[in-house]
Length: 301
Image 1 (cartoon, rainbow, N blue to C red):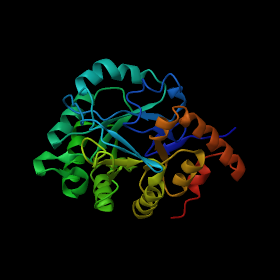
Image 2: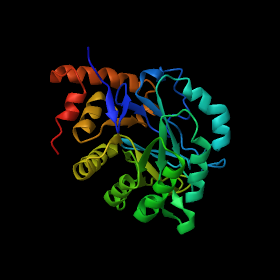
Image 3: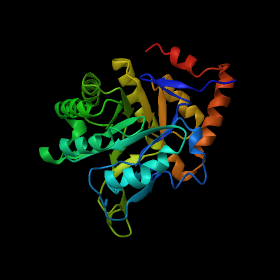
Image 4: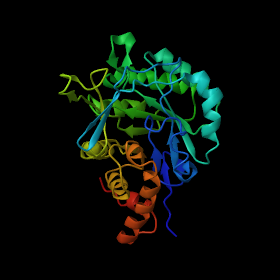
């Protein structure tokens, strides 16, 4: 029997496939197509302290081998999330990471405070959003701010803590300081800054103008980022970017990821994560392996 279980910073996941934040709502859009309890885990849509409306439409633009989104982190706020959405997510028999964000450190801390006693697996900090207290500079581009943020979160929340990195900027410095300040693991990485043009209207295709690129187009870029970060830091990593197959998952693992998060692929096929799990088993059989952990142990970077 194949063993697909993996450990990420001491937390055991039944398999390496989690649903990434932001592409499947709060589960309601996938549960009719997919048994979410069969997955290694779920990462919730980003949650803020107060409700957030998000960006004006259009919010999505297709590109060759990718998708640009500018949803704007729309969500009902942490109190509504706790009361109406969290109980539904906890009903699935798998790990739950709650993705949180804020425009100031105090907003991040407010969300962590609200969730600190909930029976979740952990928090994932989205540090790609702008820090209004510093003139709009993204948290993830300022290692000193990330240090303060992670340290302050750690004073409130003692559970499993993951930092989701932006894919550009001083990524290595930010990753290192996040781990030194108390993060247990990293998600590598968020979407890549991008834009698309609508020739018919002679305007940018998205209502906000720019957005974040995801999908197969970014896989080689994010694979290198995972490889570089693992080689330098030997950190527990969730690989996230362009995963559509079991082969993709194994490639991420061989570059240093302990587990992965699947996002855009579910928009193309809501049953894709289940297919990925089947394909992982098929690929392991081809390699003559019965234990996914053997691939992790084979890393020599």
